[in-house]
Length: 399
Image 1 (spheres, rainbow, N blue to C red):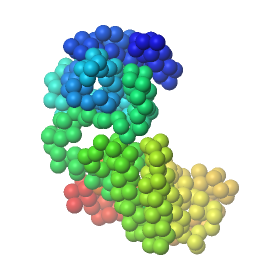
Image 2 (cartoon, helix red, strand yellow):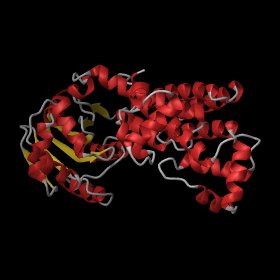
Image 3 (cartoon, rainbow, N blue to C red):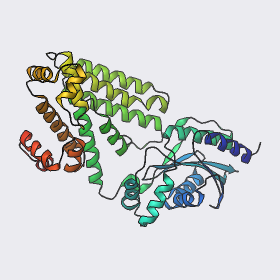
């Protein structure tokens, strides 16, 4: 079976897992073939985003396959067919996204990072094409890439053998690097504050942080080692935040050491991938349990947990009464007796605490935060915030 037959079979196999296309380039840079219905548009984007040039530069010097990243999260993978150490053809799979793309992200990627001047109409058209591009974990793309390399060369490689080529402008982020680092710091502070308070409604903060950064920017060709380093650093930060939240140092350090050891023992990215989320969730729940008021009855604790998990909604005493099977009158009386606050005031204070985290850890506007927390208007939110904290939301954020 020749190379083209091998690659035809390979292309059919990976199509079973989604719309992941295969491309073939000659050594002179011409596109020889592809099975992509949007071939013209995506091949143009491949070149426009600098991936084609980096692919050829890598292939001239290296034999190992490479992933080609972009500032908007678009990924391709390339493997090299050589003859007498000379580049003969390059085979490409992709594109895929490692996370969902937004039109705003595409525009920022072109204008801020890539310095490309493209029309709004072109960007919108490009976005329509990108809607068809599948979202795929980078580890799965790398496995497909290793399979493709084997089809071309008969050589079996480890996952860590796959090189990564990120766009220089995307790595450097010359457009206001302080601003980008500050965003990361803000997101990190929000995540750690949720650990300190045992806030079970943490998923948005975790997702926001992951979308900003893939981890510690260690310069390494060992993807697994870089992943382990990121999880160890993240675990150390979360462990200390949990101690600040009231978890005993003995329990926190013991738990942290366990997760670090598990990370070090991981043999692949598939083992490593879910570990940070599991660790974060574990610490959050332990701090939450520690901070649970032992003087609260199970019914009132259930109401308190419901309020904290539903701060984006308008919560009425009647809703809580139905939740625990009390009459509204009995619920309001018992809630104030055990917490010292009315349902309305407890909900208000809980929303303001969440607002403080959002003001410190995100760049959401005051209006966006008020909407997220279920306030009728921005002005009402600002008024309540000032009553509770003594400052307006803007003053709080500036300080």
